[in-house]
Image 1: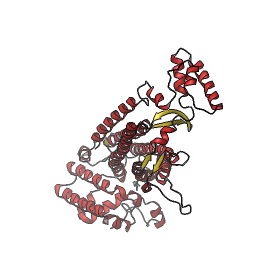
Image 2: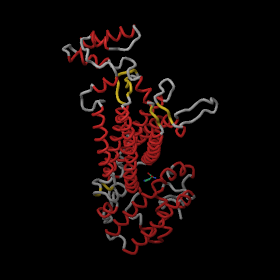
Image 3: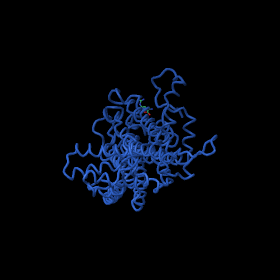
Image 4: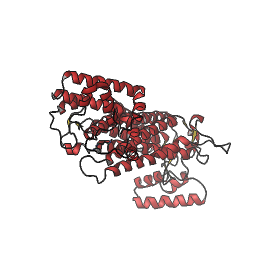
Length: 463
Ligand code: ARG
């Protein structure tokens, strides 16, 4: 069976090295099951449009079943690699011809790889987005479970801005904050899964539609799309959903990357906020004492990798004219590789987070370091009638004095500021918070509950 899907108008064979350069087979083998589904959709369009008869349709469907089995047991990949194919789409078409004989030559009637690739990529994106959403939901749920535990312990933390001590918060508040980023990414991924099921490009053919009476509605229905796409010229070159998928996965990985940065620092003796189980740590080949938090460092780096994949995918689409151009083969490869990397990073982050032990005693004991209650004192001064500027200056002066005297802020400072009832301890600071969404334990408990509800609804909505 010839590996090329064209050649009649060519007088000589292609340069072998250029053919190899142009092959995306290895990258897009991951799309094989989706291409088989796409091909089933095209059989529906051909049969329902009266272009092929029932027996030809049956022969094609049986051949596609064979190929699906070979994909599942791994033998298709071995067969395809031996064949010099430009892409997985051509390889599957060839394998169908092996099995279906003459009827196999009708599978590509009215179809171009242009509408085939666009449709296959959407079928892939629908499942990958749902899987990404499930990964992000799982991480968010773990964050909330750990937040519940930390809430019960009332573990405190000196939250930072610019890495400088800022204000005392509950560790549960930090964990619930992490959950929010993953929950948002999960919601976006669920939206991408939905978008991937709207318009079916199949039947757009190369770019102008087909002169064959393909039943595009039948194809769309067979493949679970809402409707056929509206404009063939747009449909064959549209990669918006694939780009959105990569963007949404990148966002989930960035949430993991930012948390990883903090956790890496927290494992250092200088912080000593966290002990990481041996199961998630790595040793040094030279320094016998070392225990390194490698999974979090690698997750951090995966954020960079995903940004690269996303930027690369965007760049491959930039500036190319409407319809299909071969550049889009590279978009496909970037998206596939990025999705695999992103899912792996989310899974690794969830596993490593489960191995984190927060040293609540250390965190709580240090939550007041760096004058983290100063803002609460200033708020109390404002409530006692001062302007914000006056309060800021007065408390700043007390901080300066305390620093010179090498002591924390205390009752004497509150008294000197005329607010003897004001909290000067981290727990008092946290319990004094009044706003919704604050670090007050009731607000954190409400956020955990609301987030868990939202995650359950999202999980139910996934295809
Ligand atoms: N190999 C290409 C890809 O996977 C498909 C080529 C489609 N069309 C074309 N005229 N070369 O994206």
